[in-house]
Length: 289
Ligand code: HEC
Ligand code: HEC
Ligand code: HEC
Ligand code: HEC
Ligand code: HEC
Ligand code: HEC
Image 1 (cartoon, protein in one colour):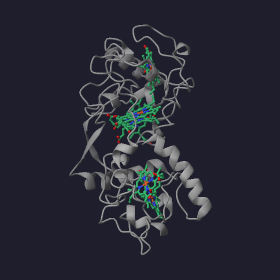
Image 2 (cartoon, protein in one colour):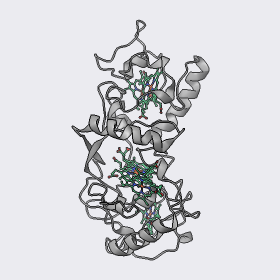
Image 3 (cartoon, helix red, strand yellow):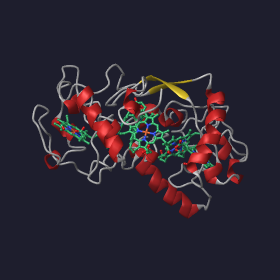
Image 4 (cartoon, protein in one colour):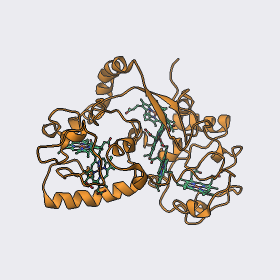
């Protein structure tokens, strides 16, 4: 999601909370505000009788304010009105002007000539590195440890199966991963404690910045970074959910239940191996086939 907005939202939420106590999830969008001229609320997004945005303006879930937050089905199609949206920002732009809010995609590092601006490296590295050189972990001089560097801008739960993957694979899986690294000439780096992190699966750079013949630069091709990850709804969604829900409930025990939403990946970006054809998953998992 928009990091400028996220930070802005944090402050707005605090300010809003101080003014009028409304029970909202953390970092949530402010409510009970009359839209200014800068905001364009679509006609079929209902406001309250005072003309203010309220829960129903954005959520198509009846009486959402009466449901405990962790029981709200975030994957219900109407969770965000007229959704689902491929990206949360697409929802924001239903009311906010896109141009004013758009931010630079910092992974989009190369210009049309294949050159890069060293300043853009410094979002994540203390100083620009040379893509041709070999570096040890310490020499990468990342501004934050690699396991947290993505989280200022992205949520810890950017997608299903992210958070529950940030743990330490067992010995057998480690061996399987090392074999996959050799076989596909990729890297699947773990953090200092040997845990999976975002960059175990995701490449942080646009493809081509680091030579594709180097393991660190070898990543999925084909997707458009400007378009990002594109999903499409799958007609089997309902069947898939029903089938998985019971098994998932058993697996999870007392943990908060999640609702699955089966969407097909249409194009992928910033991944070390393709998830669409399953090869990313099979770099770690060994499923019976
Ligand atoms: C301006 C639009 C807007 C309004 C008004 C609004 N919401 Fe939300 N709400 C959102 C967005 C956007 C999200 C985040 C969706 C995401 O991260 O996937 C969200 C998330 C939520 C969630 C899920 C939180 C989580 O992460 O599990 C709950 C619960 C929720 N809103 C309740 C409410 C309630 C109750 C109200 C009214 C008091 C309300 N919302 C008003 C836009 C709005
Ligand atoms: C239903 C329309 C609607 C949607 C959808 C919506 N907003 Fe807003 N937003 C508003 C209104 C109304 C305000 C109050 C400020 C105003 O009217 O100018 C506001 C204020 C804000 C502010 C406070 C700063 C400012 O611009 O005044 C931020 C930040 C913000 N929204 C971010 C978001 C993000 C991020 C999303 C998507 C997750 C989003 N909004 C979706 C209507 C909306
Ligand atoms: C979004 C954050 C981010 C940005 C922006 C970024 N990097 Fe990185 N970079 C990382 C992370 C995380 C690693 C360690 C994981 C890896 O190697 O993929 C890394 C590793 C590297 C490596 C070592 C690769 C290897 O052989 O292991 C080089 C070289 C590098 N970056 C160069 C650059 C250059 C040049 C830029 C600017 C054009 C840049 N990076 C921008 C996050 C970033
Ligand atoms: C300075 C902010 C920033 C940091 C740090 C950052 N990202 Fe991003 N990332 C973005 C922006 C901006 C986009 C473009 C899409 C958007 O606006 O959400 C993006 C897009 C992506 C996408 C493609 C999603 C899509 O559909 O467009 C992935 C995957 C991703 N980032 C992973 C990572 C990983 C992994 C890291 C840590 C190495 C990271 N990001 C660090 C800002 C950041
Ligand atoms: C087990 C592998 C794995 C891990 C760990 C992982 N991701 Fe992902 N991520 C994926 C896959 C697969 C996709 C969908 C395909 C793609 O990126 O092209 C994805 C998609 C994304 C997207 C785009 C989502 C969208 O709907 O537009 C973002 C942003 C992202 N990941 C960020 C992160 C961040 C941040 C972390 C760390 C907290 C993380 N991922 C951890 C595999 C992973
Ligand atoms: C970097 C290694 C790695 C990759 C890549 C990976 N996984 Fe996992 N996955 C794990 C680990 C570690 C666990 C924890 C349980 C275990 O050890 O089997 C796990 C657990 C799971 C679980 C059980 C979730 C739970 O809460 O118990 C599912 C389902 C799963 N992975 C699916 C996938 C899918 C689908 C992909 C491809 C998109 C994928 N994994 C890619 C390492 C990985």
